[in-house]
Image (cartoon, rainbow, N blue to C red; front, side, top):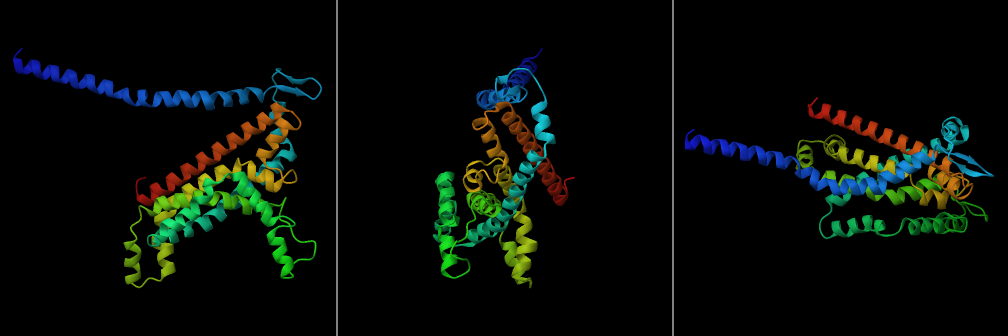
Length: 306
């Protein structure tokens, strides 16, 4: 074998060895994070799943006898049907309102000039730096029976001396949830706007299109991925939110998260609370995955890739 052939063979072997070693780089880089994730999240989920099959007796407590009674109660009891429907109804309304408010707000912020853009963006996202509990308690002071809203309506004569309270109502919960979650919609739409070529809108205006038509047919289709991804984030967060529905809705307006809390700490029926948690997780995962697949198919057809 000539010297050139030997050099070529050695070079090929070195390249193959390097490619084999490079295949393991992603595993070594993601391995520690994956183990950390499985230990801190996977194990509690598995323990919750196992707990959901245990038997509970109000006199004897938790028995490790396996049963499907907890799941049959959650899946076939009208009481839990009402709670799940209420939860997803509030989530849907909150998501729609966040999209209606957050998308135009992000567009207006994006069209502002410096330094006003940075100032108002900070004002919009600033509430994320404050605890959710603190913000929700602020809404209690506004919409409660003796709150500022009630006092204002009394002053202008729209309500009587007894005032008006939005506490323990769907409206109050939705208002507080929209305030808490609309920054996530603004962030998602803002990220899409960063990729939009706004000169296309100017070109449409120069060709005689009206401003609303430009927004509807030129700008909105380009930021639609941000609206859809923001809607997914808001819906998933709302469906599992605890603090705001617990404070504003109280025990009169139960959602799934507050129902789980009551089962764990009020009735001490941990297996039933665990089964409610598992059902909520499965439903959320199914909804999120179905929504994601629908969005992917929609934009694949739009871009002509499928």
